[in-house]
Image 1 (spheres, one colour):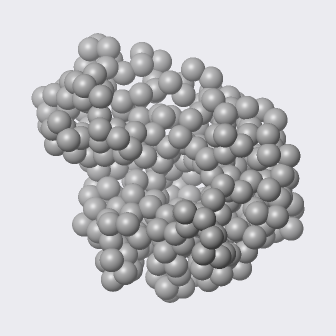
Image 2: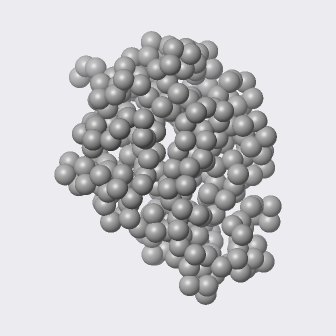
Length: 315
């Protein structure tokens, strides 16, 4: 497997590289110069899928993509962003953004993203975390995205969430092309195998895997400060991760390599988009996708009941 291999998004003409770049850390853990350098480095190693959202750094992630992506041919990369967590246009409120899944909110958010990114169209537009706003998203936000797709301003549409159950309902009710599923199909947990991933595979819907390291635990030293699902890792999850790492160590395989390659093996998964805070992390992610892994590793993980027995693994 190569990080630069490509997969089609749904039934669209879009092709994404198997390794993408998540934009959450561009405005959180990297300064402006570092962000530019890591985006340039991602492009130089062949990454051609870049993800972001307005709420990442309150618009700063989108702004930091603008200059380096302007140096690339627009037809040579795929860019995704989101609607639903809308930046405030005034100083009111205690937060710089608010949930807005209305039709007007989705369209205004889209227009603002175009301006910050410096582009005229978005390749993939996702509804961002409508967990507590399912009905409004169904009635207003998604129809707005469908119209944008019909107008040619968006190439593909879907939802980006940290749960698969609601995404499955959207898949059944709406004509969507793809989903971004963060942290719910990983080396640590495979609940999405039950219904979601098989449905997407059978219906030509692509899945983009975000949070492949489960918000840090699979990219850490697995000490007691490890993070899982955006908070301190529970003891049982830490023990599970340590058991997986012990098997990886016995086979001489980096935990990160196993984490990325396991996800990419499922036929419904088009790409994985780990975040990066430096050019070195971009390079490491590319190496991890391409690190040789013996088949015996996957057998050992399943024999130890550390992976779902039905999960596809590299051969």
